Length: 112
Image (cartoon, rainbow, N blue to C red; front, side):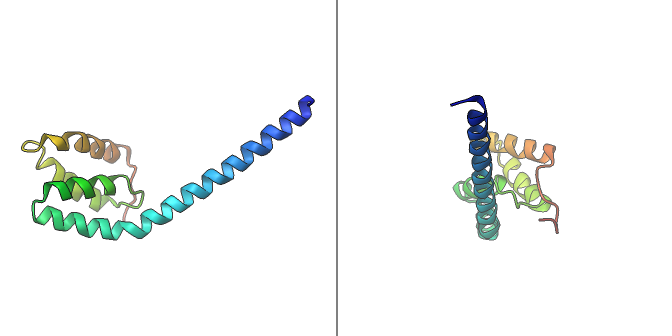
């Protein structure tokens, strides 16, 4: 193969990979949008019942959902931080929430 063929093959491969990656990201975002309300309701229920395993499970899922809104993140942060002292297993999750909040990596109400 000459240099031109190698360059064209490389560029086409990179283009195909970029398209496949975008499809993957789009599907993940769509799945996040569909499931967020269910996870939010289950988190609220776990929080109201002081269900530590449920809080940890759904708070962890919500924190990584790209459709989480500021108000929701604040509620999750309050629920987790208020339990860190008695439940040290929340420390890592508390740090993740803090960093996510600090970076502003969340959606504000009404944004997509």
